[in-house]
Structures are given as C-alpha cells and as structure tokens.
Image (cartoon, rainbow, N blue to C red):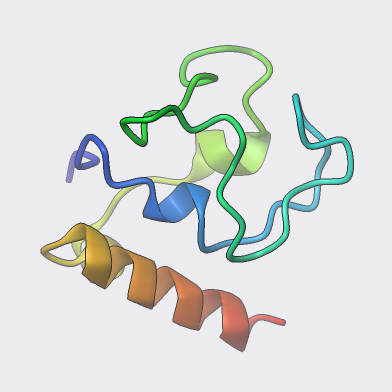
Length: 83
C-alpha cells in the first residue's frame, strides 16, 4: 500500500522517542510533528535527518484503513495500547 499524500496520521498520533530536527526531546503522542508542512507532507521525507522509526514505518491497510481519519484513530489506539 502506498501512503495517502496529505494524511499525516503517522506524524501526529504516535510518539517518537528519538530526537530529531525541531524536536530535540522527541515528539509526544498526539502532537503534530513540526516537520509536517501545511499539506501534511513530511519536510524530511527522503533525507538523512528523518528519524529511523519514521523511515521504518510502512503504510498498510490494517493501520491506514480507507481514510485519513481511520488511520489517525487506529494509530492513536495503537499508541495508547503500547504505553
């Protein structure tokens, strides 16, 4: 499955524990990543500064569902279950 351009759910719902550009202490769950532009596209996509966890994430139907809203709900629930 290819990412839906402009979704941004994986850049909002999960926490990121590693530090990266504009997030020196990581990113808390539910906080919009500062690397998302106004179209919900990652400014670090394809760059070495992108966190490994972001690089390793692959869109798939059971996580992303059929809509951006469904992806945000699923990822929020997964984040809560892993805390």
